[in-house]
Image 1: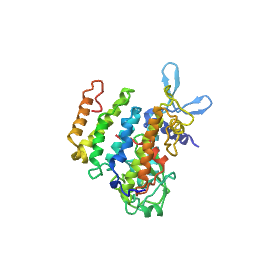
Image 2 (image 1 turned 180 degrees about the vertical axis):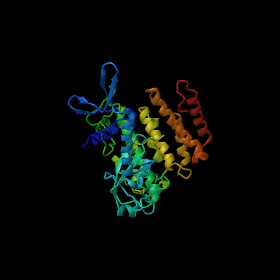
Image 3 (image 1 turned 30 degrees about the horizontal axis):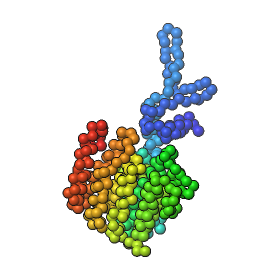
Image 4 (image 1 turned 90 degrees about the horizontal axis):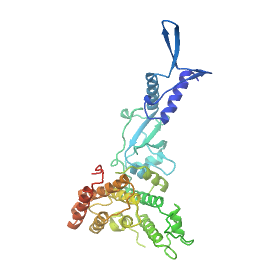
Length: 274
Length: 129
């Protein structure tokens, strides 16, 4: 690896951890033992010769490297920004595999041909969430070529809007996913904020669901007996039971739910709603 | 057991009651209330609560009563303000959305009172309003 390549790799690594911009990066290069230089500044003095001052890399140099890295990154992938995680609930996220169906012409499938495209072709994509809670899907360059001129490589495009993509049996499926996700979201917060360490609380060995909920465990089936349960515990169990009941109700409603519970939970933990 | 085939065939209060219970519960802390209010806002956004929903009137009566009398333990000021903001957002969804025409006078008064009470709280930063 040459000197320039080493510096470039260093900048690339630093860009992963520092705030964007060359101003937050300072680099010195150790080229040999006791020789830490990047740029030598020779200062001449009229009366006794000259001396050498060592300086870090200049900002302009780092900026040039940063812009070069960004250009390479942009050229290597096409970023698609989606504005709501609910879309993923509908059709694009397939459980844990995190594969997203994309039409052969580079477009996202419309509601009518979602099924056929999902069966026909999968592109592996890198699914990441940024801090603004937008979901970014990066399609690698090795995927099929994109023919449409407005979807050229390196160009950031917005292909999907909440209204433009709905599954075939649309509304039911969408609402079902929303309710599931909201139930998971509320139950998650309830478990997280459960005051299990309260001194007023009595937990008996038979209060399996209360103990389970306090430890953050899922309760497989609601227990309908309140024997030996403290008042607070019974209220908590009752609240949890309501959600279990609601889940049972919406299970009977037509409309497929193609999102795993874990994925729903992650999406809602990450989603930034009002 | 009869299984409803569509969300239009399900009574809205049945779907919303678990979330109302959370809002009414004395055990609920700020984050829990916040999550339940977010859920209600999502239901408005995704169209679950719309003008054609079954038993909409009853659901709105419960919703306005629950949201207006929502109480929670105070923790830190910013966290509390988030919850208040979410209460206001749900009220906004009710008053300015499709379902506004189904609201009764009592419900509108209740919610407006809540908004004005929140406005007049001097200790708040005012950013949420």
